[in-house]
Length: 144
Length: 173
Image (cartoon, rainbow over all chains, first blue to last red; front, side, top):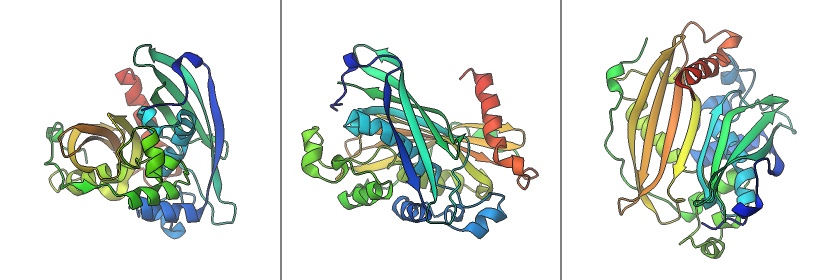
């Protein structure tokens, strides 16, 4: 577990590089196959609307995976993430066009937790179409 | 209908071992468009002292959710209506990353059952152990079974989160 970021080099408020992740219908079909989550709300527009959704929505776990990349890309070694949690507050709606949707993710160091374990808490903000899609999105990361 | 509180604390037997494969990790990493070489290249993973390619942090959800699905959600005695279930929140606590070659089991436990504004809120813990019996990761999953009468109103989409926020405030989280 060797993060490429040093605990001594970060402080509360340090921002991680922000990223934007595109989400298309094709991404959702591929994620369904890889994850084994074939719930039709993630690929069948008719079904999604029948259960009261505006359109097909992304898997919550897909959004969680993308949001987590801001942390793992920063840390270098994904094993530096010792804890990661989110609340699914709003769906990421993915229209059936070439453009699809996008999740914009920012994150910053919110607390230095333990000088000995060299752990920090990173708070993550994920939005889609101007709305926050994750709540209480936090990771605990062990730095070098 | 509110779920039976007596299920709180119930643990289900460990699942049969799941063998983590390099190509399954590759398939998953490609599906989340993540090109980090530690997911694809054993040498890159070894440079970080991992024995083989490792799995992205959320990979394990497929295992823990399958275990919860087969044991908890479909427990006829519990009586959860899965057609109304949405994923409320998700948290992982890692001892180490999963890597190719791991053979792991999942032990599911019902941590809590709450009823809020007609929504059933079920928290399930999935503990993942390797063949040596060592802890790898614990997955904490909260599922919200939406109230019957609220499901067709547009506001119903936000109701579970609102109900959970109210509970979280009560719990002081």
